[in-house]
Image: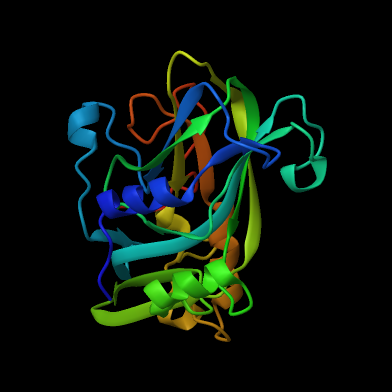
Length: 267
């Protein structure tokens, strides 16, 4: 399978995303820059050097060695919830959310430290307390899904694909995870008509294939129907962080907790 570059993803996103309030039309004013990261840059790294994404990525627990070569996931229906909203975007209606139509979008997770720009979209000025989206398994009964699968046949009935090696043996991990994600933005993301806002989704890849004790598991044992399927799907959902990131270093500009917090080894 040929993996799209980050630039290709940005072009796809530009052609498939349109921001609107309550889905009624384009928003005026500002812009949201949406970035992806799997690990923050070192504190001493400049934003320029942090943006150089390396591959592959290696993880260890002192006994086992996991090497990850590629990570891809499918999302759709990205929305930002306004501070004044009291329920989730799917329930609130009205003008409580800025809905960024995604349908569906393939994201190629950068490996190494720093942030890769995924896409930019118009966004109305305001304060947003939560980002919501779906990790999405394309289905045959939706026209946009069918077109997506035609372009990306490896994702028929699959939302996540990972390739690499575990203790020197090649693996191919896939998941049919279909889940709604709601990630709090604390403090809220504040946007204006005068300047773009930068939001980073940090995917803490170091914790995807670990037990609660930090022991690595073979990703091949987490495929659909196998013993570690539930463990890894739970980890994927629990290791997503979102925050304002104007310097594009993969860390929260306001000093919030992000990335791995369990002390597990990462190299």
